[in-house]
Image (tube, rainbow, N blue to C red; front, side, top):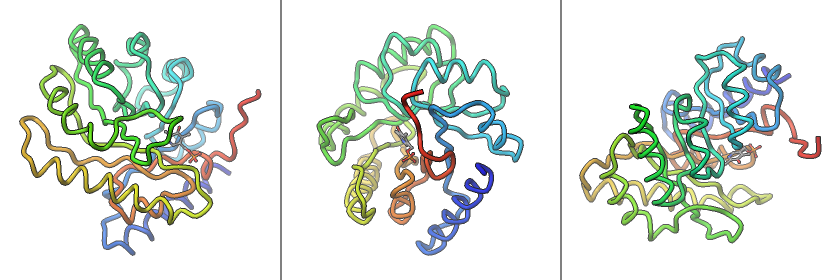
Length: 230
Ligand SMILES: *Cc1c(COP(=O)(O)O)cnc(C)c1O
């Protein structure tokens, strides 16, 4: 089932990309496997899928340990500074850097271990109260500081748009994030050249692709509804 679902998502991604005049190869689908068992991940792995997204450090650390080592894990959930150490050596990119303090802590840990870490800055474009992330107008200043930190590289921006029944309502936020990335790149800040836009989830990834998403994070459409009560 998950394999069929995944293929359907890929097909939709391709259609949306072509409709927007983009190359489907420029869009990475992250299979968001939080709360889902290893068996489901392995089904996709056996079909060649390698990029997965997870939200919770404990769960991610366990999955990293038990699943094949060539999986590329993306940390997409809120990260506490004292938990960086559990994932930093095995995660491909941290999408959810939502403060300067967290960026500094990641840099420190990366230096300590002699690794380099790719990160995205999470932006709360829609100003939702219950969400983490920089405000749009805070990003440039934070970026100037973060760009000076060793062993850390800001690859781009990430957002989670509100949960809405009509994905069109979120188009404005995806447009805004894309514009923010372009505007900041235009300023030629030292060590800043961002190319990643991580935006779009099950409900709105097609709109996000039309607005320039390079990474879509799709959970429910691949793995089915999540049950948090187990
Ligand atoms: C859970 C989650 C997703 C996937 O959401 P779906 O609606 O199930 O596709 C994507 N991004 C983040 C940050 C998430 O927490």
